[in-house]
Each structure stands twice: as C-alpha cells, then as structure tokens.
Amino acid sequence: MPITYEKIGFDYLKRIPTSNRAALRRAMEATAADMTQEIKRTISRPYPPASKPGRPPHLRTGDLRASVNLRVIGRSDKAAIGAYWGEMVDYAPHLEFGTVNMDPRPFVHPILHGRGQRQKWQARTVGYLKEELARSMRPRDRRMANLMSRGRR
Image (tube, rainbow, N blue to C red; front, top):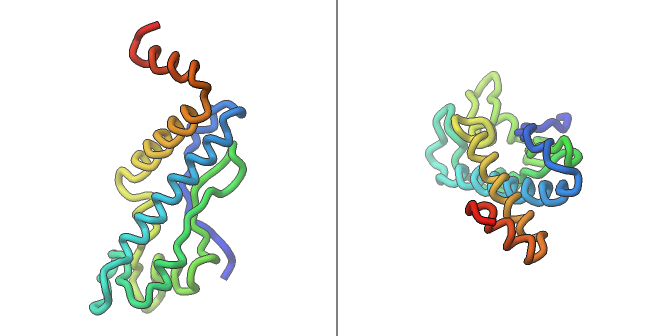
C-alpha cells in the first residue's frame, strides 16, 4: 500500500515571522503528541465485543494503538500534522475507511476533523506557541510583554 497520510494544517500560522518558525515547529510537535495520545485513548475499550461500525475499533492485541504516531509534516512555513498510514499496522486503513466486507471504524479522522476538533487543536497549538515564545524571550522583554498584555506600560 502506498504511503499516504491524513493531515490537519494550520494555514493562519504562516503569518508567523521566520525567526519564530522553530518555536512554531516545537509547538506543532507538542500538539501532534497530544493528538496521538487522544487517538490512542479512543482505542482502549477491550475486545470482545467488536466495535460497532462508525465507532473506534476495540483493543485486541494493542498493535494498532502502539503504531499510531502523528507528527509534523513538511517545512515549517507549510507544516501540517499528519498520520502516515504506511507507518501504522497494515490493517489500520481498513479499519479507518472500511472494506467491501466491513464498515469503517474510524479512529484518526474524528480526532483530526470531527466537530470542533480543528479549533481545539489550533487553540492548543497557539497555547504551546505562546509558551515557546515566552521561554525564548529575555527576562526583561518577558516582563515588558506581561505589563503590556495587562494594559500597562
């Protein structure tokens, strides 16, 4: 099977100055780790019984859950967070998308693209980015930024 991926991009983050792209990449890597943990959490109900169509698969051997690993894809100016199907167990796409004999049991798509998920992950990335930028500031600049954010000078 060719290596393809499911991804979520944050186009508005392209406006971040080039000097802060390393911080953006670290923020996106932290978000990807959070997404990975959330996907793994959805694959935790024990088998039997089998999961119902449209619900995440139940845990049998743990191989599927262990193979899930989202990461940052692409350059920092066009980065996205994605899951490479070629790096997961060979039956992962069959569970996610279904087959002619089995309805899908999605576990990646709902976490990346479900209702409200995009906004949640964008907010989390922005939060991590603020932490990264604050960590990289000199103490004097950090104090000034804190005062300005409170409306003082």
